Image (cartoon, rainbow, N blue to C red; front, side, top):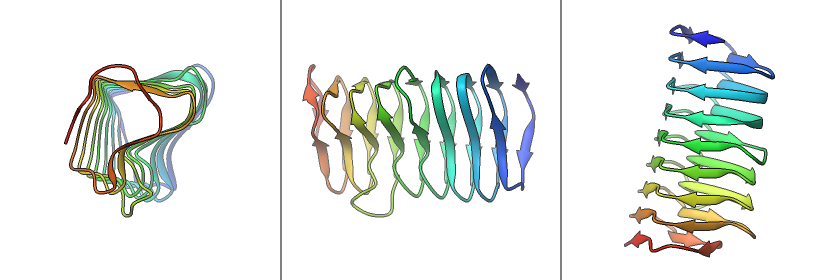
Length: 178
C-alpha cells in the first residue's frame, strides 16, 4: 500500500500488482505514464498529472475513486476489465479520452472535460457493457459519451463536446444535454 508520497520524473511512475492500495499520492512528470495497476486494486485520492503518456491504466477488478487526473499525454483513465468502479474522479486536459473502459465498468459521478486532441477522443468512452451515470462531461474534442453495445447511460450533464453529446448506448434516465 502506498500513501502520501510523490513519484516524479521516472519512466513509469508506479507499476503495481494484485492487492494494491494507492492513496494520497502525487504522480507527476513521468515519461511513460502515471499509475499502472493489475489484479485487485484501490486507487483513491491521488493526483496524477503531466505524465508523458497515460494517467492511470488499470487491468483487473477494482476501484478508481476520487483521483485528479490532468494534463497527461494520453488517456486520463484507461480501465480494461469488467467489474471496475470509476467514481468521483476529476479528469481534464488529457491528450486522449478522458475516461476509457474496454468493457463492463461502472462509471459514476466523474467530471471529464477538455480532453482529447481530435474527434476520436471522447469525454467518456466504453466499448461494451458499461453503466455510465451521474457524470458531468463537457468541452471534449470528440463526443461527450461514446458507448458500445450493451452500455447504458443516464442522469449525466453533457455539454459543449465538439463531435456531439452521445454516440451509441441505451438511454435509461433523463440526461441534461446541449
